[in-house]
Amino acid sequence: MSGAGDGGGAAPDGGGAARFSLTVPSVSERSEIAVGAGLLARLPDLLGEYVPAHGYAVIADETVAGLYGDRVLRGVEGAGRGGGGGGAGGAGPTGRLYTVPPGEALKTTGTWARLLESIAGDGFGRDACIVGLGGGVTCDVAGFVAATFLRGVPLVQVPTTLLAMVDAAIGGKTGVDLAAGKNLAGAFWQPRLVLSDPDVLGTLPDSELRAGLAEVVKHGAISDEEGFGWLEAHASDVLGRDSAALRRVVVDSVRVKMAFVSADVREGGARAALNFGHTIAHAVERASGYRVPHGPAVAMGMVVEARLGERAGVTEGGTAARLGALLRALGLPASLPGELDPAAVLEATRTDKKARRGAVRYTLVERIGAVARSAEGWTHEAPDRAVLAALEEARGAAGAL
Ligand SMILES: NC(=O)c1ccc[n+]([C@@H]2O[C@H](COP(=O)([O-])OP(=O)(O)OC[C@H]3O[C@@H](n4cnc5c(N)ncnc54)[C@H](O)[C@@H]3O)[C@@H](O)[C@H]2O)c1
Ligand SMILES: [Zn+2]
Image 1 (spheres, helix red, strand yellow):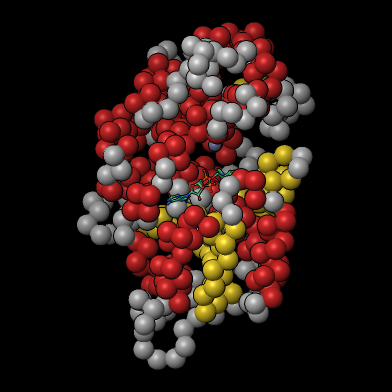
Image 2: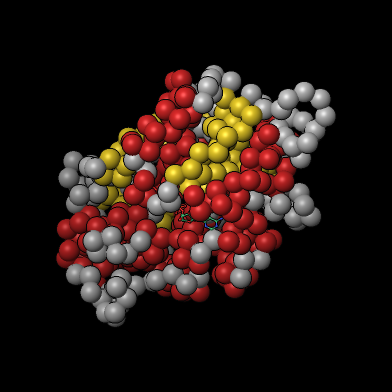
């Protein structure tokens, strides 16, 4: 893969961690990404090595703060002192925990502004580091705080959902929602360090685990046939939260996301591959009045877009069926709720913010493990009647909503 070194790869766990570094060529920024079971205990060493600072402002939602806040605070206070927080000699860095209520509803400019005021009011300065501890909501907000506090201070992400480990914490997109739509205010700001400890996924609700798995399947489908095949063989280990299985899932998936991000940091071309399944997913979310959450919507979207590709002769026959089987094995939906009118979903694709000049474009795969390029780059225009036919084919029974 391009632009990313890998110091650990798929080596057996044994307490070791997979390390990647993502160098962003256009801005020469480097992100160190460490994935390993039990890695949270090594936070002091990793901070000392990659992000030494006088003070760490840790941002977490209340749920995650209750579960992991103390451990992370002890970790940041022990940074650079040989670990553990009780080290010899001199005062260590200060750590302070800032909490916000959980949920997307608080991913707002108000939360962002309050955090900035609190952090500034507590006397943090240029030598501070912001630590995002939590799911994608927290990583996005904390990242935007880091990007804007004093025009930018170092950022560390400690993702605690599978979705944040494989998606939200990787790639440098940060931001908050506006009344006019999701993620409309933000900045690109690369974390210096991303520390993913799959052991924290043990406390994650099942629905949140599955939401992350939808993006994991997407990463396999666009670029990692081996990882996809491994998931097919080990779906039950993953659902059972076997630590080594989760680590493998995170490592494979991070590798894919990093490859596309480093090829296209500011999202003009290759990064579009990561939208596989998402044009239909966003339309399903909107057409259902947001009763279908993002993860299941991505699962449905991938099946529909694979069918669309098969109809267009771009995607190898049987791909939609193979995707559907894996998604079902992982507890994700492979068909659209019968209550959803395919025509309404089609209509909802037209307001996708990724639609250019009115034409709706789709990311398609050639087969499992390979995204399909088009004459125009990475996305394909699809006629309405083909989209409608694919939506109708993927329609399941009523009762899912
Ligand atoms: N920046 C990006 O590139 C990017 C990419 C994808 C998604 N996102 C954003 O990510 C957000 C969704 O993230 P999410 O799904 O992680 O949601 P989330 O942050 O709301 O977390 C989901 C829930 O799980 C809880 N939780 C988190 N970790 C836990 C743990 N270890 N144990 C128990 N409970 C835990 C949280 O308190 C929350 O209630 C959206 O806002 C989306 O826009 C950003
Ligand atoms: Zn997504």
